[in-house]
Image (tube, rainbow, N blue to C red; front, side, top):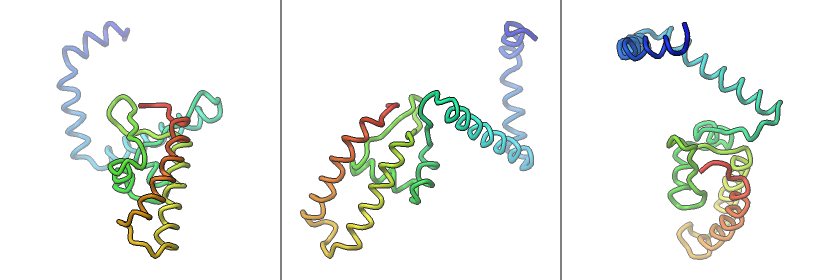
Length: 150
């Protein structure tokens, strides 16, 4: 089927086709698992291709980034709300981070953990906030160099 023929067919039948597909996805766990596995393997193939061909940076979703730094998604969102890290956007409304940004977030997580463990000061104290602000300012300067999408 040519692309023009497909476009004509899809214009006429696309709504029904998509409704049937969504229904099957919702009702059939085996089909859903197969589709999700395909998506995961596709992402892995894309990453492997980009990394091997050096076609550009590898991007991580917020969930993948959180997993790499050993924190929850809510932690990354909280850091954005506190302006420790800037909110990144891939143009479709999804958060997307480069490898360098994930590395910087790992450093932020380690810094905050070390600061709270080794410091007797209260987290709300000015001294604590000043140390965090100084670290974040340094990190954000590096972040901008790793900023590919926004």
